Image 1 (cartoon, rainbow, N blue to C red):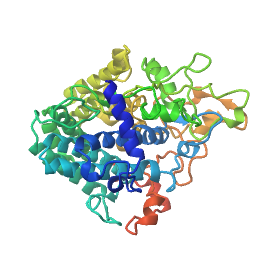
Image 2: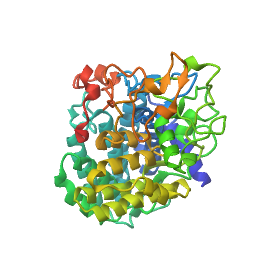
Image 3: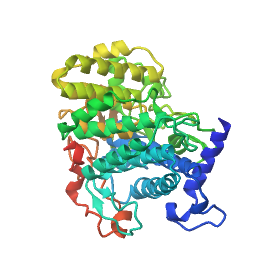
Image 4: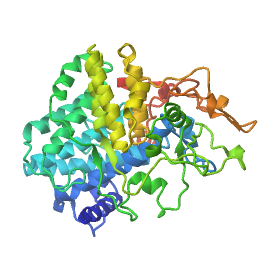
Length: 497
């Protein structure tokens, strides 16, 4: 694996340096030209840039907007996010620009080279990664540049989210039609040393995810989901694992940004009372796999909208649980647990309660297995599947399962399935009273959301932040960028309407 540690560092270096066409910054003559690069040199950079943005920044913001993370005492870098406030100036560099310049545009170069050499395996791999990136951008902004994103157009037009989803599914189908499972794939981190078989399975699973999103608004896609359930699907979690090293630039991105010792930063993220109190209430043994104990040997979650700055002497920086994270932690893109939940949802929509229940329980067991703890059957008994309110069953169970591995996806599914729901009787100010310096997590109602303290005026009480506003970097440079307005924050993306 040592060579992959080296490649990880090289890929990060590529992502932060200056190959002119696909990083859109000044050219560095010490680096190879686009013409000299091979897909095997480009593909790792595409992967690592996706990992860097999706696995760190989007995970953090998703954690706050899904109310799975709260702000650590004494720091305030993400306090706005914990109030469900996302500003146009805050998402451009680490989300929008990095995804477009360093994943999608870089991927365009790799696609071109793979197509020129009939490298069908690598063509599929890059297609899947680009599709994943485009989908994430839709899930953030809804309308984004898509059809003109691959062209040399300075001000590309924006396409609506459904158009993008339909387009990337068609791209995946086109790549799948060309490839065979024995085709070779260029150097990569997700499936190192493997041929196209695992990429085919990942492609099918990604389509399953996208069609499941679409089924929320268009049940005509259910036959497509049925076909995918019978298709070859991953046999293990699709994750960057075994490729991280304990050195700067080669660590898991979330660890590097929030826990690593090589950066002069403030640590910000703590667990939220929503997941901590809900897990404690049900005796969920995943709590120790997902979150650390605090300085008193207990699990304690913070409240959205506050950093407990008025509680000096009562609460400190070590008073709250934090996400369990190591330098070599897997960075998941799509897990077996999620696939089982997608299957459960399909059967629930078809009214097949028996199969829905079977896959629902399988998803929970897979989550506990991945966490390395027992107690799945107890959790299933505590949260039995209910076909009459299957969205609540699946939504709540998935919310907890994702809280330790993919908080951005948790925010997406929370907006789509609408569970956990808000308890309109209990707000953040009831749980945490900053005037009297009292924190009463026992007032939180397990399995629900609450309105953050000082919630954004654009969101209001008992409501989610539904999307990111289009970033300043885009609106300043592109006259086609949709104009942000106050109500945009509460306007669901297309699949959540």
